Amino acid sequence: MKGSLSCVGLGMMLGAHVGPRARATIEQADVVFGAVSDPLVELWLQQMHADVRSLQPCYAEGKSRHETYREMVDSMLAEVRAGRQVCGAFYGHPGVFAGVPHKAIAQARAEGFDAHMEPGVSAEDCLYADLGIDPGEFGCQHYEASQFMFYRRRIDPSACLVLWQVGVAGDRTARRFSTEPAYRRLLVERLVEDYPADHVVTLYEAATLPIGAPRMESLPLARLMDAELRMQTTLVVPPAIPMQRDHRMMERIRGLDEQTAAAAA
Image (tube, rainbow, N blue to C red; front, side, top):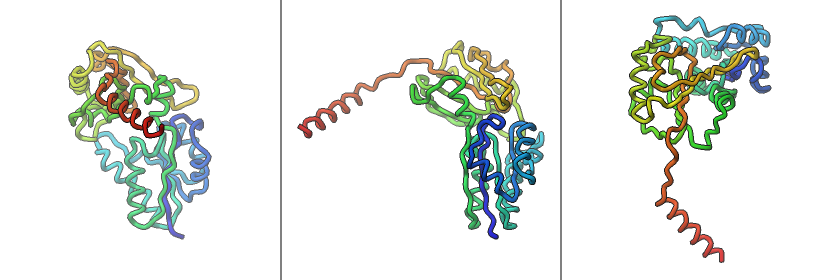
């Protein structure tokens, strides 16, 4: 039998977010590789399949995450090449801030195997629900925190700004699980180019267990460097100024409306 690969999302909360297609893919696989957020989630995953292999041991302090990700991809592809139906089960959405599923699927397809990604509830989805943010109201900008620091970005302070993995902001090594306050100070210096230092921001972490609650901690931007940050902490910066109407564009649209109305008359 020819092997195949499916990468599915388990959602953020234990048992609450997994969809029927993802569950069926897990149950019907020959082997399941799990990359989950909590040991309890891993135990729950093991109840759905007899052969669940954790990818968490690939991580190690001081070890490059690039090497970790290569090992994860290689582990899954080795079973695919052996002719097995492989499922990679990832917390959240397997395509959001998860390079391994993208790389594994691309490699499997390049080698002629069937490969599929099944979406899941991501931390972004939970963030919108918990914080009451509609990204269509003012717009929403998303960046990985270190990437935001490494490259010049044109920020619109009239829209929401979401910075992911702020706990490792400024890490160039991909070997650390956190960075020191001095790195966050540089991030704050970059942000105050566009936002007041006293602008109230939110530190967010999605709940992963039904008995838990999301972290939604508000504080002035200037205090970010002293806050407790973890790998899963997300920084949410609300709009600081009103949206500015583009009067020239509005006039051009009005002209088109008039032309359309005249043509229809």
